[in-house]
Length: 102
Image (tube, rainbow, N blue to C red; front, side):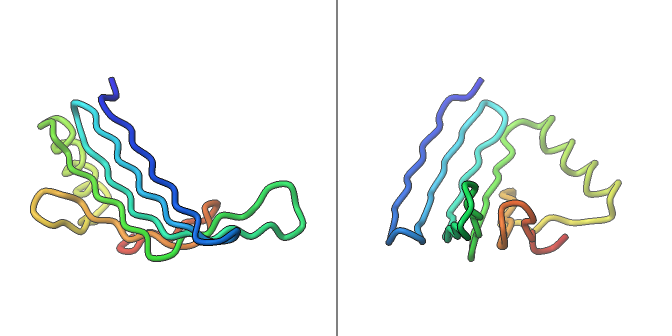
């Protein structure tokens, strides 16, 4: 069950903008602060490119925290954190996102 979805989209001009997304469920909270640009390239499907985007994931439920720790152990990776909040830095085209730390 999703308790809250907020999307704030601010177009700076016809090709760039900022998006803030907040999603809250009983199990986790996700905050996205995205800076993006859009390229039409003469096609029907524009290319969306993210710049300096930050995703904050706060696992609320113990089961979600255990699952994330298990995933980290299994994959030999440690997600960046501020306290218990996972911080992901994301950039690049939507079709091929680069997540720093992976």
